[in-house]
Length: 193
Image (cartoon, rainbow, N blue to C red):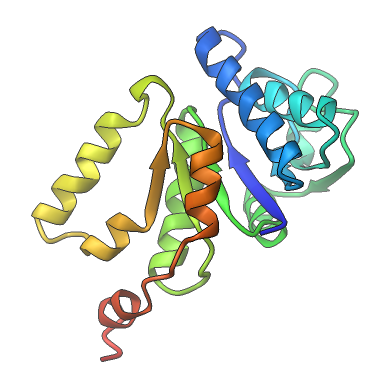
């Protein structure tokens, strides 16, 4: 892996523990020599993540839509910033630039990006690792819901297991580096067997 796309919240009023986790994630990426790909914002966890990556000597590639490319929202000191016309183009560009994906705490946008990336893996559009940094149990209930989906036969166990999760950035990156794509489950789900 050379680059990691991180999805996270942009709200400035988020808990300080989430800001601390975002900064630690950025520092960890920089120390590992991994380029950060993210949504190009300067607010909330997004801004903390980008700032800490840059301060630790890392590279940061932002991708933002024209509508969000405003002085209040855009980070102007990145290694590279690309502006897209639509949110769909933004997500596709972030996807293309990354070798793996991590979700930190966030709201609708973070969850949308996380699940779209998981869905693309499920149908064989990519074989890249997807992980969650589960800060202070933020994603515990979501993970329980996914376990319920497996019990109800709505999600293959292999697809559930392919969503990596840890509370420590270093361990999460190690798990992602060791990720093995569930080819058999994808073929079964796509009814190719």
